Amino acid sequence: MELVHLYRRQNPNPAKKTLTGLFRLNLRPPRGQSITDSGFKYANRLWRKSSPTSPAQFVHNSANCFAARMMDKIQTIPTTVGLLSLGLFVAVYHSGSIRGIDTLPAGSARASHGKSGLRRLSNDESLSSILNWDLDPWLPQEVDSKQRLGIPSLMQSFYNNALDVHGTMSAESTKLIFSTNGNWHLALRRLLNDQYFPANEAVKVSNLITTSPPISVAQMETGLVKVGNILYTNAQPHVIVAPGKVLTALESKGFVDGGRIPIIRTYGNVILKRRGDQRFKSFWDLKKVKAGRFASSDPAEGGSYNNYRNSVYNIALNNPRNAGLSQEKIQEEAAELRAQLFDSEKGVATIGAPMHRSLPHMIATGQADAGLFFLHLAVTAMRKNPGVFTAVFLAKGGTAETDDPNVLEEGQDPLDGNQVGNFAAVRTTMPVNDEQMAARDNFIAALLSTEFTTILEDVGLRRPEGF
Image (cartoon, rainbow, N blue to C red; front, side, top):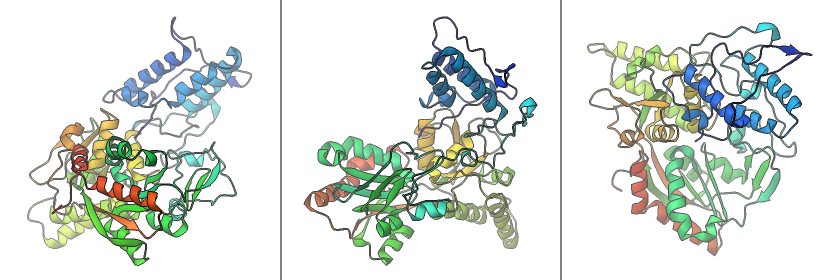
């Protein structure tokens, strides 16, 4: 997971002058540095000044830092044109019209429009409302998350883009097609890299694996997987790993061959927040979250969305805010908290599916204050973005928090009402040839191996009871 975010000071002033309607920027880098080096240092400085509790590593986490990439591109065009173009970009960016990622920390005052007259977008307006790239019209089209997941398509404004590669191809001869919910992707990646692919070299160069919101039912029905301008056909999976509700739907449609093979059990949810945020230290501190500022799954991701929503309500029921409350009052407060976080007119804070990327993005960029998050996904977010997040345990035995993924991976004894997930693997009814059958059976064997048990323990997951 690469969360790239460029914070800035509330009133930066890199572009002051106007030249024939264009802004220009003094971009003389220090002696001995390239313009790109200077750009990274500038981004680093802005981050430190705007968020002293967050390290500059968050900016450096990806080579895709927007400003640095713009500066890098400038080196390939004439200096005068390059400076004018970059100056215009910076002026517009700092006025707030380019808002792919929110550029103000939570609670910051909105800067004035200035003479440019350009409107600053609100936190409710996403990148897709200002940047809209055309997709190939001959492919299935999608408008919202529900329609995307029905194709299924994995297109997302911030992730899973493939706009400059165009293709339609059949996956019929692919040796392994595997579909799963994406929230255990870190463990899966390690299993594939460390164990399965080294032992199955032919499958390493012939596989199609989706770690998205659960699209397995639609994928079996349509045989399609779409990402941007790439479309796979005949892509029904050979193996599926999913929670019980998805498996029940697959079974009801006759897509499952044989029984379920339990492989994974979660530790429930924690509260994910920005490191240094002292407002949220226990479950009932979530009452401080204002409507529209609670990060969660897009409602179209029914499984995780309902998990988080039900967990809030059931934790509140089983762990009342104050001792001595009547049962009627306990139920009333539980319903009020759920409604405040999930059911207001503003809804939850999300940029859409997949939630395992959206939810930490919203918190890291200041567009949300906190959210419930699977413990193992919090481990991944913290491990991939050191110093950015803190997790508050929702566990029996008192309140505690940590910003150390090595501590969090040890798990928790979840509070009553904190919903725990169980995932199982199934073979599908898709016809397979001998090579595909071997790839499928070897993959299931890897999922059941002791090596995978160790991997699960390293990422905040565990085996099911009685495994």
